[in-house]
Amino acid sequence: MTFREKSSSASARNAINGNGSSKSSSPVSKKPVWEYAPSPEAKDHIEIRSQYDLFIGGKWQKAKKYFATVNPATEEKLSEVASASKDDVNRAVLSAERAYNKVWSKTPAKERAKYIFRIARIMQEKAREFAVIETMDGGKPIKESKSVDVPLALAHFFYYAGWADKLKYAFPNQVFAPVGVVGQIIPWNFPLLMAAWKIAPALACGNTVVIKSAETTPLTLYKLAEVIQEAGLPDGVVNIISGAGDTGAAIVNHPKVKKIAFTGSTDVGKLIMRSIAGTDKKVTLELGGKAANIIFEDAPIDQAIEGIINGIYFNQGHVCCAGSRLFVQESIKNTVIKKLKHRLKSLRVGNPLDKNTDVGAINSKMQLKKITELVNSGIEEGCSIYQPECSLPERGYYFKPTFFTNVAQSNRIAQEEIFGPVLSVLTFRTPKEAIEKANNTQYGLSAGIWTDKGSKIFKMVGQLKAGVVWSNTYNRFNPASPFGGYKESGFGREGGLQGLKEYLNF
Ligand code: NAP
Ligand code: MG
Image 1: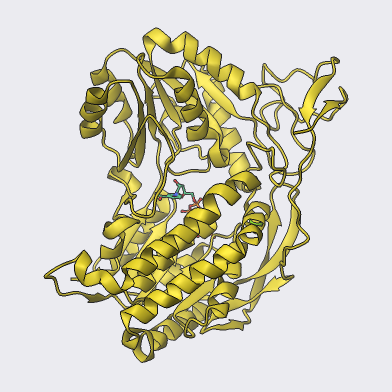
Image 2 (image 1 turned 180 degrees about the horizontal axis):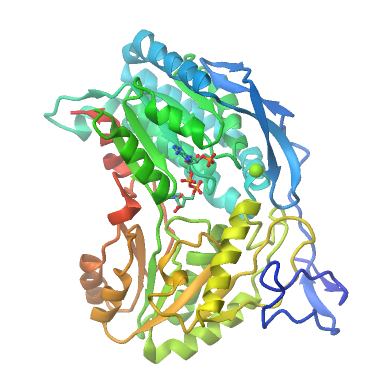
């Protein structure tokens, strides 16, 4: 690892991104500081076309309108992508229906498995390219796309390839059939991974797919379309389109779409529920979260600090299961805050393509505005803000890793999903109080518990209303392990056997 001396005049876009009012945002000191030398990931092996059409029926098909996708780290345009109209959605659904009736429903399960396996293998060969494009289109640090997004996406294809010809062992003595055409809509925080969560089990169960990427992150899905072509998957089995909310709504409302798999915000989830009421469509909703990360006084503190950091600053906090509410037992509050401040100072914020970067770019201008607004509400409501001194790049959308103390449960920052690198620190005295406070939210997606006592973990897990509870770790995923929410975090599970069930009619 190389270090270099950093000039004291390094530009610093300080303050709470925009309004310059942060207490900790004094200019960079005159003293020379030792910095990591830049370690940029190469881009010369990356192929991004200047324009992407819709991937329908195994072919690239023109749309009437196109929109730009930008690199949020630099604000540069990366490509123009098709905006699918209602007619385009209809074309995609009819192509999926044709593929289902003529080919896929007649393809033996073990052949389906081979296609899914082949997709995984080709993705694996292009893993680096996928990682770089994911980072450029979405702003996440390259070390995360390389070590989390892409390998986990692959793992889902491999895992579900294995199940395709073993469904009768997964659901013994039951009669079941594929659903038919499924419509899938995904968010921008883990584009390739969310696509893998959805496409792999759908294909394993014998369905055909129309999937829409999120507006700001269409590129890795179109890269996946190229892989699907290379794998020789029969035309129309997977159709990949891009567009805005209207495109998503057209998928949801199409009468030939028999199941909706949606990952996104609770607000849009509610809209979807309203629009399919009274139909026979199956639906799974993976929605927002406001997870409690609970640290007991008997926890291994340094390990817990790493868990807090990973819980909220991973992927700039654009994580549905982010540990955005930290509950610290009162007796160790001062120690935890001190260590947290120290650790925040060592987080490197900046160019997501730099291999040293810990916190990359905020996904879009709109999201940056939302985070800034909620952080300002925290300040206005009297909470105390902490941000480390660090310089932010001149261009692009960035937000300093932030935490708040003196937070009341009723404050907006303790109730609303910020979906940014912002942590609210609260305290508790007893396990009972921790459970009550942790469950005091409209959401119920995930939680974390840090303690030395196994018995405490079991007691807590049974009473926390959260789909996933991690103990002495955080943000761990495995294709074999189901994921999903309670309450307004949605219903249905993705991953594992439970994830297969959602794509079959029994
Ligand atoms: P979003 O605004 O709800 O968008 C999600 C997807 O739905 C996007 O593709 C979006 O298209 C599309 N969409 C928008 N309006 C629609 C409508 N009326 N009908 C159908 N589709 C519509 O959410 P987001 O901001 O992209 O993602 C962040 C949210 O996702 C957070 O709340 C996060 O917690 C949640 N999330 C949950 C999980 C989970 O597993 N539970 C995982 C990841 C993220 P556009 O991109 O064009 O708006
Ligand atoms: Mg983009």
